[in-house]
Image (tube, rainbow, N blue to C red):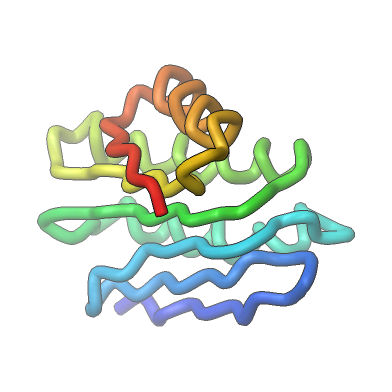
Length: 125
């Protein structure tokens, strides 16, 4: 059984909640960690395990105010790993939240969707 992974938000890093049993796959806040590889490595490792036996339905939630370029690469890595679920014809969706007047964040989600070929739903807050 894959253990839940929870990372508390800081001024520089995201809040991350990954819990297979509760079907929670959530990313909130800002991401500009000093060392993005160090921050994201446990998250990437968790998803590499998860895709081996995913839930019947996987809904990823991204509600981020801001992320830097280095974080963007790691978020794409997460989505690329999750593409395995989609490739195996299993249900996966990305709920991409963006502030109602932040078109850049919406466009970033649209770009990510095109790169990783996952179904995205765009939601404002």
